[in-house]
Amino acid sequence: MAEKLIRTPFPIVSVEKSGFKETYGGAEDIVTVFCTLIRMSAHSDTCLVTMHPIGGTGWLPIMSTFARAGIHVLACDSRYRGADYALNMEKVTVDLGSCMRHAREVLGYKHVVLLGWSGGGSLSAFYQAQAERPTVTSSPCGSGPDLTQAGLLPADAVIMMAAHVSRHGTLTEWIDASILDETNPELRDPEFDLYGSLLSPPFSEDFLERYRAAQIARNRKITAWVKDKLDELQRQGRMNEEFAFVTHGTMADPRWLDPAVDPNDRAPGTCYLGDPKVVNNGPVGLARFCTLRSWLSQWSIDDANACGPTSLGRVSVPVLVVGNTADDACTPSHTKALFDAVSHDQKARFDIKGANHYYMGQPELAAEATERVLDWLREYNFPV
Image 1: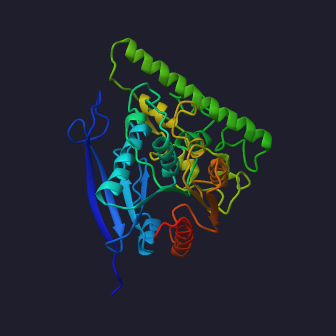
Image 2: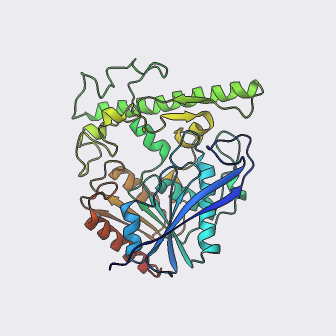
């Protein structure tokens, strides 16, 4: 009988004083981070620690493949698992810190490596930069946490796998530039309406430049409104109150329709969530439901702190960047930006030909990626 994976779930519970409750259920000021240790054997000196700001990484095909190859994986869910409407990236960083400390001090691993998959890439890079030389003393909304006082333990290396540059950078590249009125998304500029009747691929360089500028302008317009609304609440003495809102149109990136834009092996006319026209206003779109403080922390192009390339430029440990050439979520420009940002020579990059974002239905490519990652770890004397 084939040996089975050992999955050990457990919570990490801490107390954190806050002005108001922003996660559902449970006692006030109690923060719970759920983790799963995935392994084949009882012992390993090296552990991959992985966290996505809102996604559960424990059941991704690649994590099981790593474990079956003999390396332990600690898959961690932040306090915002599955719900990013109030997500604070600085608090997520604290959550990852509790998992890193648990891996070293409780589980006793000699070598701990951050595995930043997809949206966990910029989180892992930001975490490592703040663990090595903390600079962020508050969230962009002006309140905590102070990462310089968080006691974050640095990793021994960082792996960026099928990763994008940041939540705020990705949203800005995906946001629908045609929407003119945030309260009436049907009011659109036909010059920028990718799903209207006037436009079709291929798109000219001039159009792409104007479209990207309009996307940035829309992000900044929302940010200005958010700051005004937050200031209004505070002027009224409503210091801990929030305001929820909807952002329409968040999957209108020209690259999903035109394969010549940031080209790779992805299928044109689709994205990792399906038909981009449907996703553009669907319930799972980026930033669809949000709150004021959360927007500033995770979605504002000018205010959010957790930027992958900026953070990697401050990281001193070895960095590996892995791209998937058929990825329909994190495309080559992101992979390149992450690799180029690393300022030292202990870095490497490789691409997995034909691999999609999740390695779904591609066990052989997941195995190829795993073996190449393990080879890289061995180069730095991390036993696997």
